[in-house]
Length: 123
Image 1 (tube, rainbow, N blue to C red):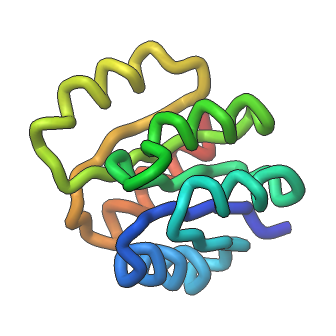
Image 2 (tube, rainbow, N blue to C red):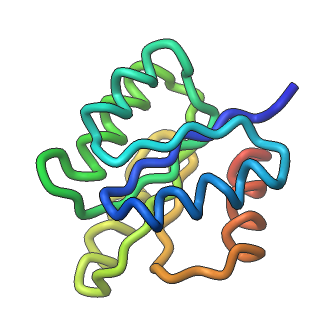
């Protein structure tokens, strides 16, 4: 059975590229550009991994994470950010979060991203 990944990023090119990376590696991947749309999907899809941008208009990545992991407690979290100023607070949040989680900066090499995602899924 394919592992389920939910990708959420307001930058369409980034979100679509991440989706392609995971699909080419055999994951069942759903891609969304807003937190609100991703939450609708999470109700029925219940991802094993949430790959989410930290800073998005409307609903922040942390709000998306809180809601998705509330609905799907087994979901692992990989937060991505292009804002280095956000790294400290995001990593502090990740250490205090119940589900296995990780914060990475964009851009990230696909091989590194997949390696970290697979490691999270094994925890």
